Image 1: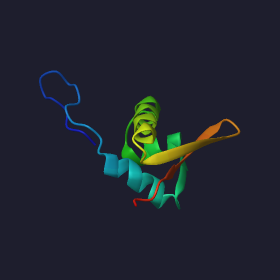
Image 2: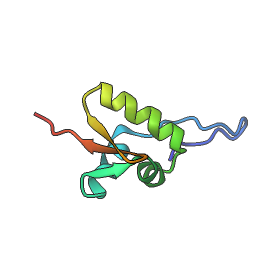
Image 3: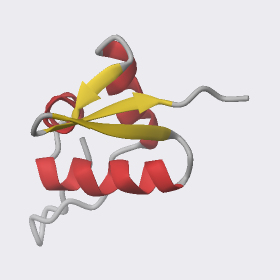
Length: 77
């Protein structure tokens, strides 16, 4: 979880990419956005935006199952 600035109360750090990848791995290779957000300790919206960027970067892929977006980790070559 990121650090919080004592004066402003705002979070100063970022959630690491590795935290998101570990969340998927710990859920047997496939996890919903909410599960990942809970694992990392961030808001659902934060997780969704980060996962979208990770998908653009070729780290994860997503697929819609019902009303849930499931994320899988792409293997390194």
